[in-house]
Picture 1 (cartoon, rainbow, N blue to C red):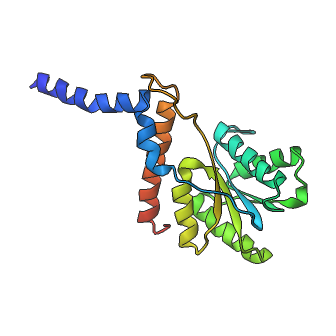
Picture 2: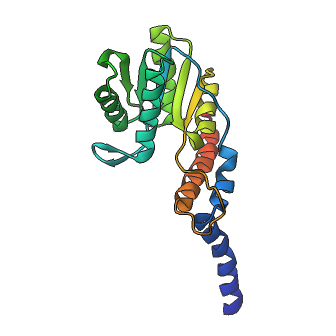
Picture 3: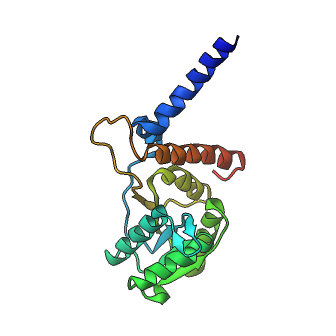
Length: 199
């Protein structure tokens, strides 16, 4: 009986180990990676990510902020709306340090992606804006797009890359565990948002 139990545990653990150490993580996350193109719009919507320290964005959050700055400099829109919790303020500060005028930056601090969508639609209505380009991480696009669709919006997207694509198969992929974690978070988020009627 103990021998069977050991084999059972091994068979359960092996797929997890492979998922978090190899390019199988890329295959696992692939359904979340969709092709999108940013379009010129009335406003750039910068979705926030996490914090490492009270005043420091995660690399993902910094990438998103860089993406919004790039769109602004390339004149995709004259305004940037930074949404999220405390991160939204830090992102706005980074944009200002990079030369975006303060009066071109708006900030709102809703608790999650769904409430961010509600805030964005409200602010757009208040300003008479009809189009938006949303900046978020590439694995977040399906969930964020479904939230906006539920709210009657069809923004374009800039999908910010988080991880370097593998160029060949190497067994121990450094970022595999992070890829697997984020993909699992997004799959769970899609289920949670569906159960709550947010998508």
